[in-house]
Length: 333
Image (cartoon, rainbow, N blue to C red; front, top):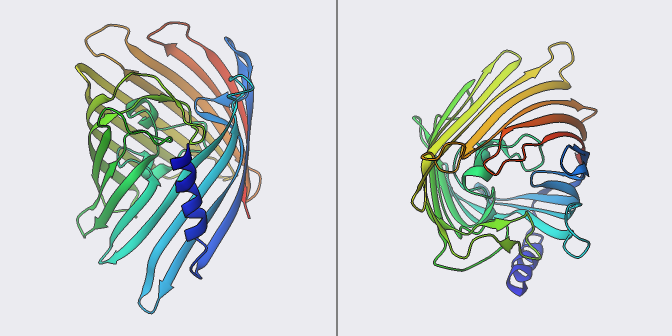
């Protein structure tokens, strides 16, 4: 716990030292709904009720920007936990990014693993998520990353701890990810990702106190993945697929999503998502498959209201559930 507190404290101290352009946002996430199994619930997946902030800064010199920093922290409450374990601090973004010139950047801290759609979508505050939580087990990790681009493609790579939100060093854990993609800016985006690492499996989204370990040791994960987005008028199609192994078990998964923005009221969006993850492709019924229908309404620049219905079509451990979730989300200055 002391190490994690020192990491957070160092960012809080270092980030305001230099005079730079900064954007400070406040965040309020209120979420609730009804589940056939758990009855009234106050979370959706890893998304729980929380209050937080984001401090985003750019530092410039005579030759342009040389450093960008971001610190995003939440105090979260998990209604499904007992009173002792319900509260926690979540450090989502906590990174320094150095501009090396020529479009190349070096990142240090807590940021997205470079795999699949998550690095380009940032779903930490949305009900509909990408495949990454099923695929890797977490959507943020501590480490170092490098990115760049040329006229043919963008490229990124990251070397991280493989422990997710919490900081752990056990059983030689690490995570290496890499992604190449079509240059940003067009209606069609495609990416190819790879992953290799010894990842620790934990339960929860907390940084402090540390999440509980699920497995006794690290899980050897190997993956290759494809992802894409296509904007066609008011329709945005998203998809990703991954294949690989967890230790000796072959695993695979896919996610397809279609978002429709109402042409006459562009504050309203309708969403459809089908997501499936096979924990062992050699075993029948080893998949977790869910269908989600959602809608969102942007009340103003700061407030978004979301409503979603999720039906679990199959769960490898049985007990398929149906859930209705409502979210009030404020993110503004």
